[in-house]
Image 1 (cartoon, rainbow, N blue to C red):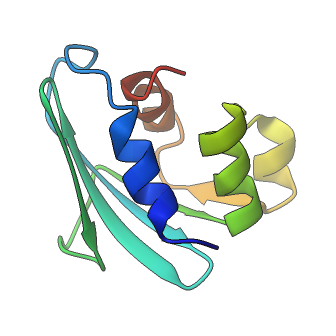
Image 2: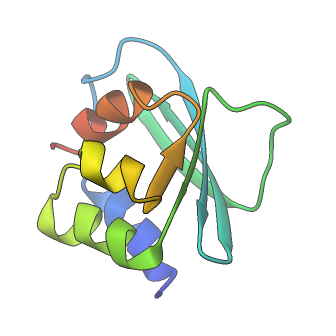
Length: 101
């Protein structure tokens, strides 16, 4: 997977969509990223930068690329098949909204 996909994702951030700050930790295959989102901010850092993120999400690079590039919204099938796991999957909806999905 091309790590630039996170930079591309950052370009699609929609200010004003979220009403509070949130921290997401993503593990996409071997790539680890911490994503800080808020009403007017989007910052992405390499690695796990916080002890406890608001949402931890692990998924395959192919599914992540599909979400970012094709605006795919993961469903129950993706979670049941193990393609994506998240400790608070409902927060992923906020994540997607912050990027216009």
